[in-house]
Length: 159
Image 1: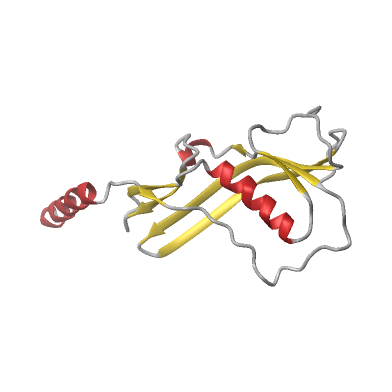
Image 2: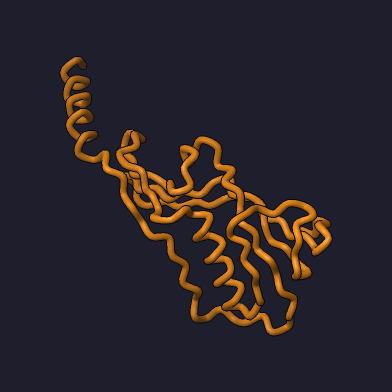
């Protein structure tokens, strides 16, 4: 048993220094060609910056979008985006709505607060609780979770 533990410890010590570099990835959204336009609506929407509500998952770092992990669950590297992911998220949401024919106004520099001046009938905003992509021995995983709210122009919660 002692020999097995010593080999495992040695293997982990040798592997960790070689794999501790942070990895940079580009977050990119490409709308699918087969997305149909929503021609039945001409209601524009304002999309505000989403809050980063990931807690400790993102190490309080808006550039962190995941990690590379060993088979033992030890993080070997952080996966970082070159720009803060809330910036990419709002631009990609805008692109997705535009592809569907919905006019959007993006407010990238601040989060929505009731009473914020908006010129569209609808406001889309809230927070992301979980945003991560992982590379483990089992393969690649990705997960996004959050709360999305739709308000009317006066700040009344609709959905």
